[in-house]
Image 1: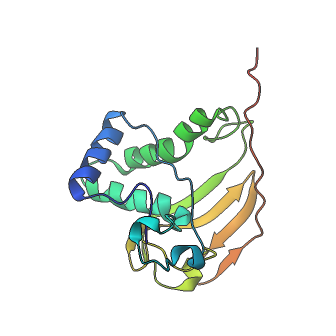
Image 2 (image 1 turned 135 degrees about the vertical axis):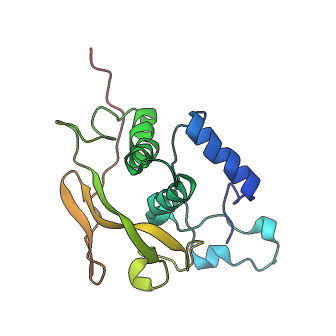
Length: 183
């Protein structure tokens, strides 16, 4: 699997985590650019010509939480959770100019919520746990701390998992545009 930017070595990852901690990097985001198996296959066998794109959006928060827990063994779980929310919700909403209605739980804002059970351990190994359209993820066979139990979009339940049974609703998202500044 090929992605851009490429997955880096441990030293580089450590520097990225340090930049997150110090606020030099203030968010984590994904352009979610997976590709079809036919686009991934490369008849010329030239790796540089292969399409870059992986399926990983559904695992981003869990991968971040897992690594955050590993790196914060002496830190407070509450502070770790605040960092996770800031990096994945608050800061991206602010950058996109949609923070007046997205990115945090406050009265009057959209009720976009991910319910995470932080103590759970789960392995990405079976199709029922992978909702990507195309097979292949760099997270297959990885163990994650935490489990996404529910996801709500504007207050509507769109994903539910009880560990045995998973229900998945049709997409209900919409294009978001910056609203004019309020005066």
